[in-house]
Image (cartoon, rainbow, N blue to C red):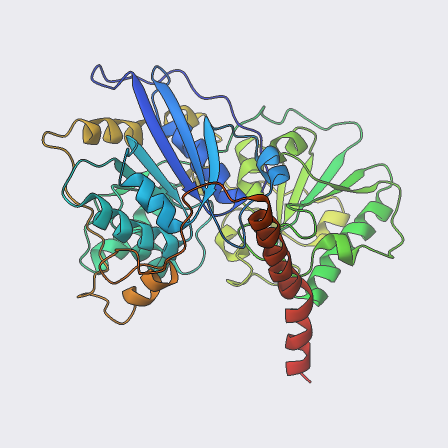
Length: 449
């Protein structure tokens, strides 16, 4: 999901003891998580403070390209690609004041144990983690993998209640759960129809996950453009073929659209979601977080029911929202009206409360930074004692032993890769993506014969 970097509020009360300068680091493993982590870092620091933001991109299949980073639109004072072990080594030296872990759950857990081993009982930063958007699957699994951070951010009151219930239900400390909001909300409120009236379908890399359903959605979007030649109908895409986002995209719409007879008012667009929403009159999606961005701006928003309301699609999250609708209804002119109570509980903050959404988290960080004697060692719920059959495997995938210490031979980089290494890395990443997008679907089809 794209989006322009919103203007930071300037109405917060800054505690007198807040440091005048802060060094914040963000470790992210995809373009979407970099966007969330960097914007969260900006919102968690007082407007009056001088902030240095250092970005680290965890090397892997979804490491964002230069184009994706440019589209995210978030600037850092430094930004470089690292292995997990290299990152831990660097954090063991000159650690920042605040560290945001914008990673998948297993990555967060591995880094928490690795950092615990690197820092021990010495001075350490405040560690923050959370979720990029709507949490509609693997709630307990993802939350327990994030346990151990000083702040586990919940993007809404609804999520905060659920997060605390999970932690308390297993006997884990729930004090880290902190209610905020999605950090990328912003933009001008919707004031009325544009000329031409513009319908935007926000595509998702992995929802739905099969050719039949994706082709169906594409055909319905094209048909909507034919039925309404006076409208602009845009297919908003997350990535270009060969690029990866947080989720693997095996069947990009760019390929599915090839060879189809497209009406003149139908177009594929990239770019910042915020800029696209500036001209949107109706946002349509299956379950993209773009729906929450649109609702924040009070843009009419439709969450499709054509493929059912199912957990695997994520649109079940929108039950009670008033936004569920089918293409037949939209073709006939229906414009969903959101339920205000539902919107208020989801962190959308369309009522103007967004300006104070990060107050509690910011105050909490300020207190932790000035805690007498510093912060205690990180204490994740999962340990070799509580999860001996689960935790070692998670740590091993990140080349860490059960104690969080890097294993012998773990990949690390002491210097920037040379030209030959860069070529090899690009080739390997390209081969992986080819395997995901071309070979894996073929093997899967063969298995279905």
